[in-house]
Length: 112
Image 1 (tube, one colour):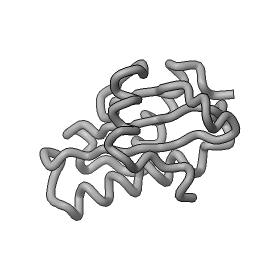
Image 2 (cartoon, rainbow, N blue to C red):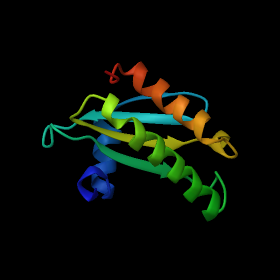
Image 3 (cartoon, rainbow, N blue to C red):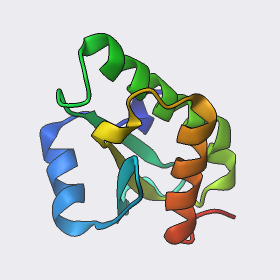
Image 4 (tube, rainbow, N blue to C red):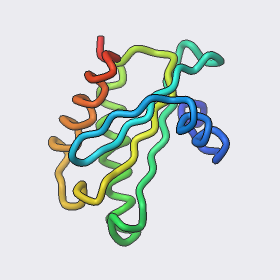
């Protein structure tokens, strides 16, 4: 849904400025408590041109979005998430991406 996405540059900057971050080998996660929408999580994904061409970047975004979508029922609500892909994500499959995503959210203790 549109309401569940971070789209504006100002929304991203607010999470970067005030949120907390954790990282692992292929992803960086910024988390910020969302006080406006307490019943949903909002998701933002950032993939640099250093990761690869547009085909590769879009595949990485789809992998992150899908692994989040299939597991979002497990996460606590009321947060803004920004996932930043590192260059090492190139060539990874879905299972590796999902494992790293869940691992990062476990570090924040956001998995029920």
